[in-house]
Each structure stands twice: as C-alpha cells, then as structure tokens.
Image (tube, rainbow, N blue to C red; front, side):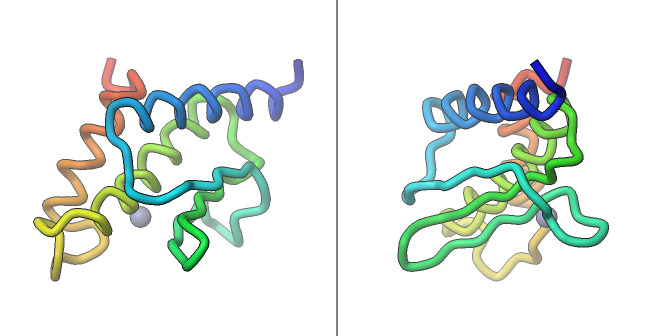
Length: 107
Ligand SMILES: [Zn+2]
C-alpha cells in the first residue's frame, strides 16, 4: 500500500465516522488531490452538495487533521450558532474540536 493509498483509506474511514457522529445536511464528495499552493485542503458547498479536497501530499494522519478542519467548516455553515462569525471563529473552533475528537485526533 502506498502512502497515498493509506491516506485515502484513512479519509474514507474518517468520513464514515464523521457521517455517524457529526453529520452535515449535504452529500459530501471527499477527494485527495491538488489543493492549491500552500493549502492543506478546502471545502465548498454548491447546488449538488458539499465538496472537501484534501491535499494529495498528505500522509494518513495529516489527511485526517485536514478532514477535521474542513468538516468543521461544513458543520459551521450548517449551524445557526455560527452565523455571522468569522470562518475560524469561536463556534468553528468548538466544532473543529468535536470533529478532531470524533476522528481520534486528540489523543
Ligand atoms: Zn479553514
């Protein structure tokens, strides 16, 4: 198994866990690929659902950390309590901590 295969497997398992514990109200397409200069990943929503990209330079643990970060954006966009707050504001930080915990990243 290559490093990219391991990152992909970790991501698939992570998405399943987040869907169970901290679901969002959209279908989410998660992919490993180029994320843009200097970026670990990005998230967006559109008419067909949400999309999360994780940099294909990531190893498994880094891919999961990026997934937690981007998933927290999806959670914040769906959460009325985060309305009007900055992208990485107080509610996002709470949701980020929950996503990290769901993925076992706080140990
Ligand atoms: Zn962010």
